[in-house]
Length: 205
Ligand code: GAR
Image 1 (cartoon, rainbow, N blue to C red):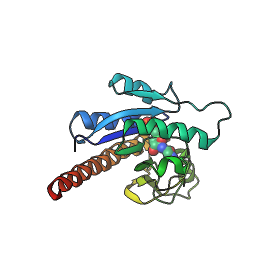
Image 2: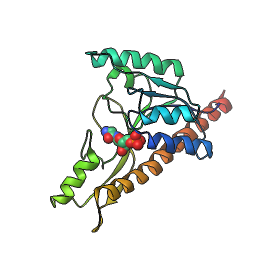
Image 3: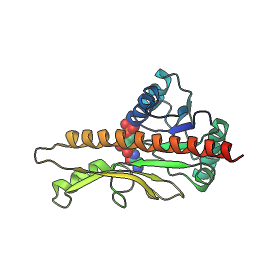
């Protein structure tokens, strides 16, 4: 196989996208980022894609647009990129079956499996720590087999502990550092596996 094609979906600042861009440039990921799609055309993720000369596709929802209609448009955009892997790196929309049934999709979430689904997971973990009901949080990368929120077979996870002298910024910084390492590692492994599968198919043919 030529380089596996990775399409990144991102809504936010794009620090995880940047970690992927850097890992591809440094050949820690044997794949290419074919495109970046964002529902927020003015997002940091779009700027980072543009700076790296990666096709950056802004796909804002139309006013009142139903999720299914948006996802049909998204699926068409993705299909045109022929992705081997779709990575949700701070993608803040729930995907419907239209998308997840057609592509291999993985998601990054700043919490441990089964904990704190949805937005603001870092801030909610912090509030629970302050309230004395939480002693650690973490990061996970998981498959997205259906429309569930931040759930699906886990590919990697890692705990992030709170420290006695923590503040939210320091804790969030440690979470993001773990995210960047975990996500690039999983994407690297998947790209390697895709290339191995492909060369095995050539040998078998
Ligand atoms: C990351 O913390 C990611 O785990 C989170 O959004 C942030 C995006 O940061 N995703 C979710 O909460 C998904 N439910 P980034 O734009 O700097 O990569």
